[in-house]
Length: 215
Image (cartoon, rainbow, N blue to C red; front, side):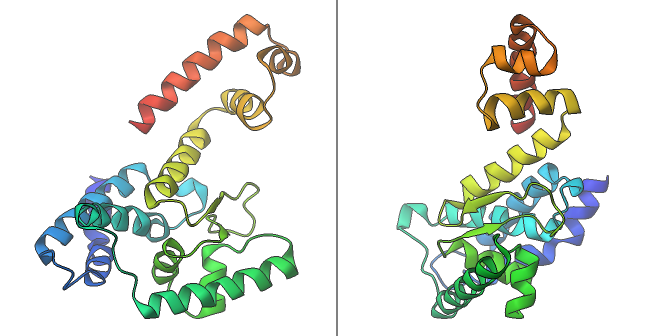
């Protein structure tokens, strides 16, 4: 299967993430097992049509699964090097935003800092400033979040974006009008040439479909 091949081809990401948590009190085999679980989840949820690279999407998911192992024993320590990189990225992000009027993408921060996208992703997880998770400057709707949010929330937002993208144009429009523009069902119906009852019924079906895809 294609997903199996993707998992096998990206096991190096798991090793790269696991190495950052060696000698923290948990056996490497356990770290690797958790990381592989994260990779499998990322591959299953990944949608290449969003313009993100698999590695960009998968690293936070892998790290999230590994960090679960440490929750009972407290927070995972952030290395001094990672802290310094997060501060460096913060400066780059602030300068970029001031010059361009938008948050930089991960790939742009990678180019500015000279660090790999995987390393940038890890540093962003320990920082606290907004960054676009789109891997393309041309993306009309980059997803922007506070990087200080939990890794799980980051992944949930990416997954939600993928599900919305998978909807047909009519259903996407209903979700956009109802939940992004916060229109009432009546206003949404008027905008789409539907009745309020039709919008209500369709909305329920769309939300059910989204819940099923999000698992």
